[in-house]
Length: 286
Image (cartoon, rainbow, N blue to C red):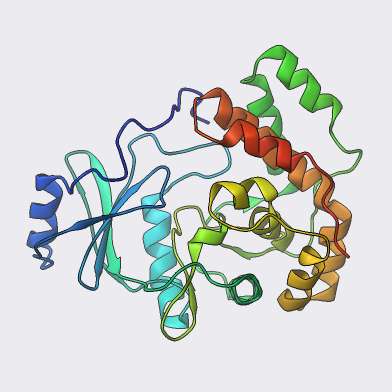
């Protein structure tokens, strides 16, 4: 964990650095008029025609989202042929920064029923690479590492709020790792997942908790679930056993995300403190 991580200083409108434009040209992706893309809170992306260039933040790792350019490249190679990720075009490391170029994905965030069906396809996919596994012990250690980095009063309040249950340990599946609503887009043919910088293995409920998270939805442009929404979306996911397990373990999974919001808010990231209050509200599946 990088406890020193702070909010980014550059604006989403930052122009493409000349050194990156030169590196892209050397990779055969010479273009003019790279346009900044909004949406990312950590990394920066630009688009020219059908190509998107992604520049990874030097200190973009957080306790839950590791921001690994090598893992993203492997994920694109694995999932693009399945229609679940953008086509990878080029990669490199220039001026001490990692970057990836990929085929652009057009369209707004997918409608929730379609997006959660994409998650089901990802979870059903065969293993792709030696990505880390989020075991219950790993999930537990993530929480207590973040709590140690918080002010004592805030950490104590969150410790006292811990639900009396272990983390889920269902059959390990391939996870996207960061399936917020803005990371599953409605492309021309079918929804496609983007931002693959933290793929992993683990219980699908971990991915679902991020997708269904009121805090993450408020931060990334999704609608905060209303009564009945989560049950409808889980029906679209279509695995009764996973839905039942999520219903059982939702309190502890969303406690984990409430801690994350507090951790990010303590580092000056806009909106996370307010989003954490949404995460602490009961999550119901009807």
